[in-house]
Length: 219
Image 1 (cartoon, one colour):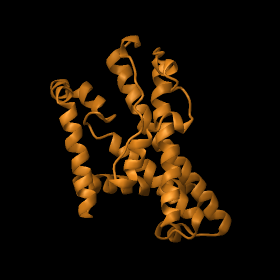
Image 2 (tube, rainbow, N blue to C red):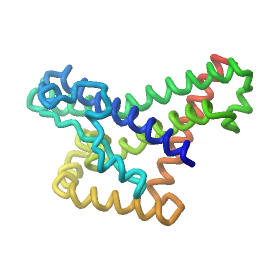
Image 3 (spheres, one colour):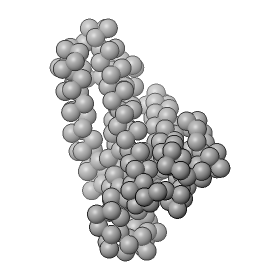
């Protein structure tokens, strides 16, 4: 149990830190100096993690990184560029999950684990770490793509459903409270709730796709 929480803490520090760094870097490359001025253009996770929200992950099952502030007025095409910046975070998590799968496959080949056995079991501390690293990053990507404020997926609603997005933006604080309450209640009930089950189902789907793709290369 202690090892599990240590792994989760390490993985979340890396994953949340690089997720927020991806937002900062993409916004900066699109002409916005705000991330630089606020000291966020760095992969250092401690610049991107809010200690209170980070602790809440372990206390109530929900937390978040320190959001990167951006200024779309610097963008040449504000709506498009804001969407690019929003998608940069989940994209980073998918890349990290893919990198984790690569290392998992390399390690499995070195110690002689078959693909079918690897799919079913975590054999040691190393395979467990990579399994958790992949699943956490996929879960972060899937969760952040939910089209509700303040999540990254909300930018999709702004592009494709502007009227609905405008209403959600006006009521963002209530939507966020409802989102957090739904997640916490679901976790406390032990069944994950609607959002937890959605994240688990979609993350597992993408895990199997990644596993199948990398298995074609290594087995």
